[in-house]
Image (cartoon, rainbow over all chains, first blue to last red):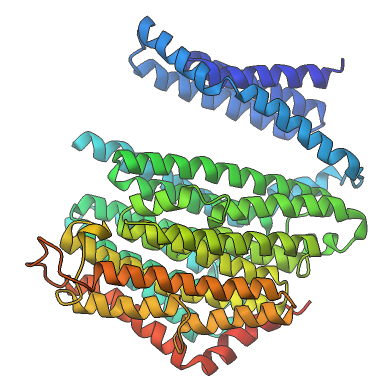
Length: 162
Length: 477
């Protein structure tokens, strides 16, 4: 069994744990584990730059924010957890089966196409496209930041006033 | 100069929030209206060459890679008109000053996002700006935070994220085959027959994303809920322009990149378009809530646009763009009428309304113009765009689709006649005896848009020369 296959299986398990776990903290940690698996995959696929970003932002920064937020929230009681666990299981039990069927169907659909992937483009070229030609996206990021600020104001601050 | 269309709304939001004077909040909406008016005037009166000139302060220091052609120009104009209407309606429907101020800030950010979306020359930037509009729309839908709004906003964001995931996947494939994300490079790579299968997969993924954003059947689940639970001004924005800019405009660009699309792609577009037309129209027939009916009607009208794009001909795409413009005008007007009715009567349930034409003559009169235009009655704007769509279908020998388009127009007329009878005509409903016409501020957008619908219809030869022919010449592959 190749390393990539093992990582993919762990990735699916951790991703499922995010959905199935009834404790927020376990969900957040599982998400971080998923990101770590993606990071290893990216290293394996020769994309160190993307891997570093995935590790530092998705596995690191976002997990810290999640855990900080969760620490402010009143934890659920044991009874609530049991009820929530049952409800989640009932709701999402079909998810792994659906994922497996969808994966199988996609692989069946793609197989006869006999895809010929083009030659790998020089890494510097892709890097240039993804990082150096992105001045207009800076404007986009500034807009997204402001929307985030107004989102917090509209969704949380206005409600608290009431 | 094009960067100003993004920078001015962005800087305005920052300035509005940095100043601490109370009167700023009071005049903020008027300032927003002024901004959109300036945008409309700029697009109408400044020539395209000057508009896309790279000279000036920003051109010297930044390379934003923005471009404008006739399609961009008409989209910028439509964005300006719809955002103007939405702000005007918002000014008179939000009673809380803070809510109104936050709404204005968000709508200016959406304006910047949509302006950017129609000017970028690169699929990755297109994705960034699509996301901007989606996130801001999510927050705008949630303004009232009741259960229905929360549910519909959640539905919208989940489907929207799925759609962007599809778009991102297709961008990754485009990057793989072309080594670049610019429209020009992708267009060149697509011409290489070796990439046929990959291109097909990428385009199909992109279509799934665009269909969800545009609210086409079977990806339309979010649209009726989101449009009906959002405040009226936000419904105008969503139905009038957001679904077109995030769903249909990228579709036109993709068709342009693929040189009119391959035969299977055209078939997918036409089938989805035709199904949306019929399902949307039948869905609208069974509604009691005015805004929900208008939302289903949007699904149907967007179907017409996709059907026209699916012809893959220059005339088809020009007709689609013209219908985008017309639909933005008459649908914004119908939502403005719905806002006036809701504000005065306190309900949107058509079963509780009736005979309002005598009490609200201006609202009733303007809604008739919009109704006739959306149903394709001559000589209004909607008639010409639908006629062009049918001609494009006929020229491409798609006779069945042309027939569906004509028949669905009759269904459109049927549900709008039912709407008129249940809301404005018939016996005056109980409890509505003391209803008065809405405030002038709420009527103004409806009057302006009704006049615009009339003018577009009456001066069609001029519109054809100035608007449709330049767009048609863009898509001669």
